[in-house]
Length: 234
Image (cartoon, rainbow, N blue to C red):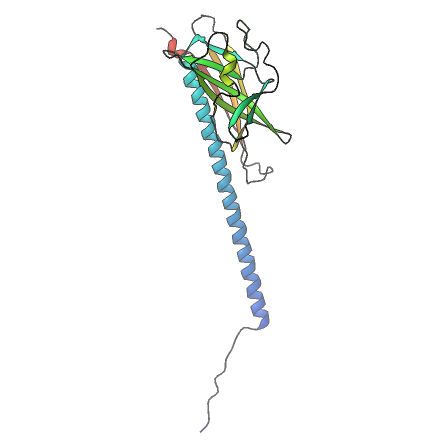
């Protein structure tokens, strides 16, 4: 009786190698696409965080200044004598790098470059102190906006509001750099109200996309015009 022999067919070595090359190219393309999507997602999250931070900071300045009497708003420039830093426990502080001298002296004129604003909300005894300070680390500078409160401020001791032993609150996340922050005071002239123009720029520190990726602007900018409108009489 004659036996039937079954023939088996398979891929040749060339066909196998070609298939592996095609699969490798597809996997490389997919991984590259997935990596780009992840970077874009992280970049978008960083941008949204900076936008959320800048909106919150501006809202704090808006609420504070618009609800204070003109005589209860004090403005100072301490950017050359104070810096943002951390103590030995990692707690943020504002340290003195030079003598305060007469920066907080009663009767001083309003400085051109304002980095500190102390305001007492109408109807309260608590002073709210808002400040913009630089943090220097490894040859780089990073900007921080902080807040402090005090019930012990008198007319001649506003220098204690950001003393090194005073607790402060950072008003934004540590993942953004306040690269620019300026306050311009405008005297309306009626002796009752005042106006401030505040400009700021927040830049995310975590930016997965390369700096050469110009399709997305890295920084977030905003300008605010606020006055003591809460005290305007009609």
